Length: 173
Image (tube, rainbow, N blue to C red; front, side):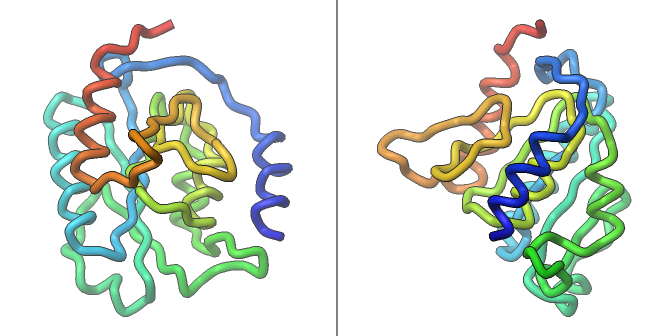
């Protein structure tokens, strides 16, 4: 029910769609799954690398419950939300998520390797100019979706490396 409603809502999102590469982007939003600690650290390394090139980087990660929010070291450009606080439709009920969605990043990068309705909500409702993600079976809110051989699900580090590779060679239109 929530995914069908999300598709309809996402179609109405107003955004200034334009292609960007790593060099042309000034602001980058990053979505990640921090329910696994290794993903959090991979995302943090990616964020640091992007920020070191002078990019404005904001990140939004999901955790399983409110208690997990305290396991991660606070970082000024990383916000976390809990899967415990969701709406009737399964969307995140969090002001930080809404603030993230409202930003019109040059690039929004989703490094979640598994489908999740909360992440789909952020991807679908985001006003980002260029959205990048892994290709999912049921939907595609990304402007550029990476697909792996034989439908294989990559590790987060591999996905990050592939995204960096493609975003360094894409021509800005």
